[in-house]
Image (cartoon, rainbow over all chains, first blue to last red; front, side, top):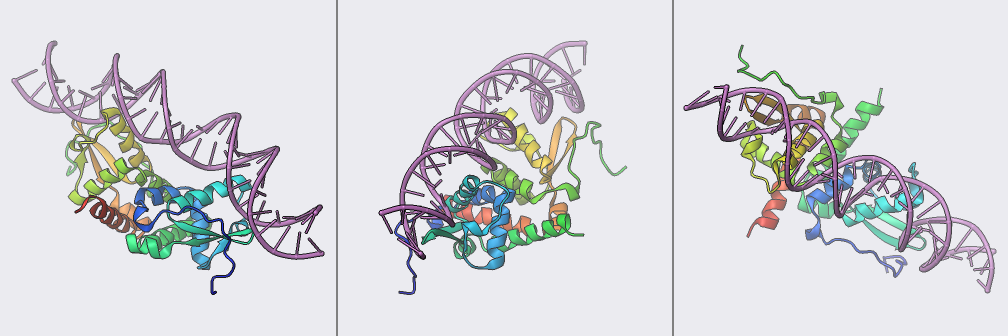
Length: 117
Length: 117
DNA sequence: CCCGTACTACGATGCCTATCGTACGAGTCG
DNA sequence: CGACTCGTACGATAGGCATCGTAGTACGGG
């Protein structure tokens, strides 16, 4: 198999047609979650939850990842003890062409403006 | 003066640099407010609050317009008894190029997909 | 089999917010 | 002036949500 040892426990994801723009916007309107998505997009690959060093407890981290998953922004799958997170770029681009890139660009611009020199 | 009879009472707006992406996304994550913005964009001009026929009371309508104003999405000005609302397209485009159009396109696509035949 | 790691579930808490109703202020028109 | 329209302010309410802490489950390795 190419798929390497995916655990049996799987998580509920919305189908592509069930993804709602309002839900996506709400998910991204939280700075913590926007940061997570920016990091996922930058890496362009799946990342484990523990890779992120967020200034909140693990409980809260779990909560944020669930919001992102249930809104359709990311997909999650267990791989051993780790839970891997990946952007649902294809689905989002299919539903809302260009939106994700636009949002990421906007976030990058704001980060540069606020955090930068 | 070219400005025609703008009432003296004016409303607090965030400056362009104070507009935050998270705030904009949060403002647009409410279906009611997204609808308002879509209508403003479609008309391409200022509209009075009473032009909108929303399924909520006037109190709630006032609340939504205030959220949109305070997040920097719209500008409001009194003209007689009417309060005119206009999209801050220039400011948003200046901060986040292309974002507004992307969002409107995404909203239109979703509306066509859900409401359409 | 036992332990450590990674993540979850659940309950609590305090804040934010969408909604309403009623009472009020500002402006226009007769 | 008086009446009417437009929108606001304020209080109340109910639900959502970001956060935490603690206790628990799943998996992999010694």
